[in-house]
Image 1 (cartoon, rainbow, N blue to C red):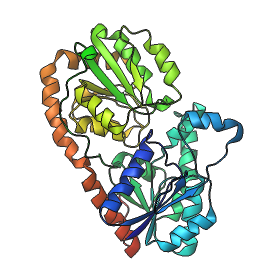
Image 2 (cartoon, rainbow, N blue to C red):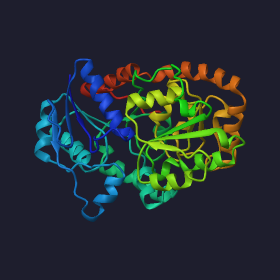
Image 3 (tube, rainbow, N blue to C red):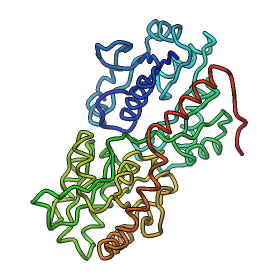
Image 4 (cartoon, helix red, strand yellow):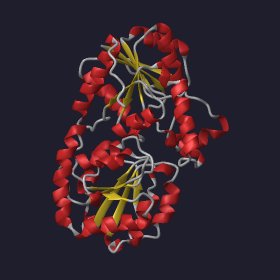
Length: 380
């Protein structure tokens, strides 16, 4: 099958969307599909059709700090790619994506879409991530300007599928995890010498407001074991300076850095605990990667986060925004290593469902169904 992948954002692997899209492309090609990619950038690769990035003028610095480069629509490039393909998969509801789905409708080309951008990811830039009216408006805007042109929507979790149904989306919603790379395996690594006597806690994700990493730093300050805890924040983003400043108050300041996949796997495999504080999350592949490696999590129970559904035990959840509760959950798991070991085995078994091969099977099924016009009835 010849598949077009249209992505408004596809750059450095410093955000979940870029990582997810690149894994999808790689695994579809691995199965023998021809994949044509339209995205911003200057890649000189076969099947890659680069388009210019949007110039945000005086806001370019802000956009760069957030690690996002948005594509500028190019009708001729889109027409060329769409005409060649059996099915078109469009990732994001921004300018390039909106142009693509409208052209697919005009050209009578099968099209599928994905829901990777949570309204809270947009509203957080204006400190309005908890405003229901604002987020409801964004859901409506996404539907009217983008998703109504497609009869299929890939939803990484049942959580976000329910959100779409609640906001009036009536398409064929396919719940398919983004999947975990085979590199993430449940092996244990020795800690580096400088951390050998420390209890190492990892949190992975973009350093942005809605990820709420500050909650972890504040909670550790309250911990009974603060003197021996070493935090690793794996990621980069506009909140980095604030987190560094806050972390200076701890006896062991956090190690804050972006890591390539191989290095991240090594860190996961020597850490003792994973903490996920995000307020808004469609899936959180970072959390899934950690538990796939057997790292026991403590996850915020935010109503707007799908990650809370990964928690298999009460001790793996804390009340979102409650740093005292987070500190207590961390202390419990530090003080009960036998519980951590038991849960480690539990999470390794649970995470098998997220293996990338199983997820690509379901993505292929959606693409074939789109070509053949097969629609599932909406679940209520």
